[in-house]
Length: 303
Image 1 (cartoon, helix red, strand yellow):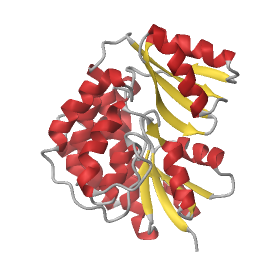
Image 2 (tube, one colour; image 1 turned 180 degrees about the vertical axis):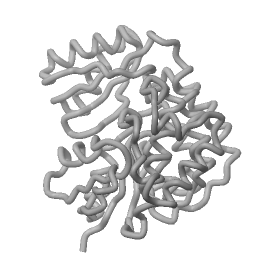
Image 3 (cartoon, one colour; image 1 turned 60 degrees about the vertical axis):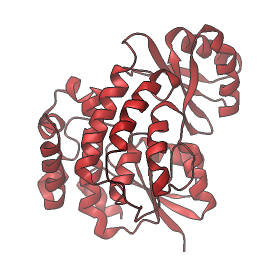
Image 4 (spheres, one colour; image 1 turned 120 degrees about the vertical axis):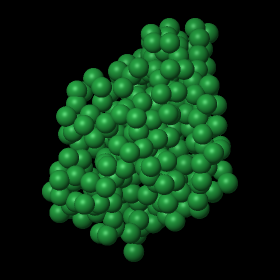
């Protein structure tokens, strides 16, 4: 018998109206959205369900919005699941920590709003950029960054699949790296529509600010194993603060997380939350695993 992993999406998966059908149909999902409004100093529920999209796209709003939607859906369906591990991509790691019992939901939603605010404000707008490099290995992209750093900071921010790596840093250096990557045989380089250079050393200060809050909250032992983006290994309670701080400004190794689970005999991956990004990445990593995506009530029929 194989094992089941539940995975949660990160920033970029959001859309206006996400989670509304769960809110309408499940008391447990309603409770999560209501708790989010209590924890925050703005009406998250209204922005998620009604927009405007421009507001939902603001990092300090996007992050708690995706966390809330993901946890609300999980709460509605958890009786049908018994995951052997949970993980997420970047922000999604917080959804994993909440459902595993490490961080209580109200604390988590407040924390990621702060995380979004700090990540957004650490670098002045227009200074940084991010780009997806398609068709080169992470090792090749590492070499590209080594060459391109003569123009400024440029680092690997996400290792998403064997064929997709994201770079982040100062605009000039990122653009230069895109050129070098193409010369080295990248199929495509796509600049991402983001407001700041996430997961690189330029925003280390955001990690420092977040750590102050992390040290003040009550973190419990995981009830379900959680795989870390930073180490691609299972988190221990005593390491969670350091790992969440580092995750702000170091590489999110989604590929490493999936490979760790595959090595450990996992053969079913359920993506819970808005969008289908992670399901697509897992398919690229391993074709013959079972992948289920749940972001609408009717998707529950697939369980």
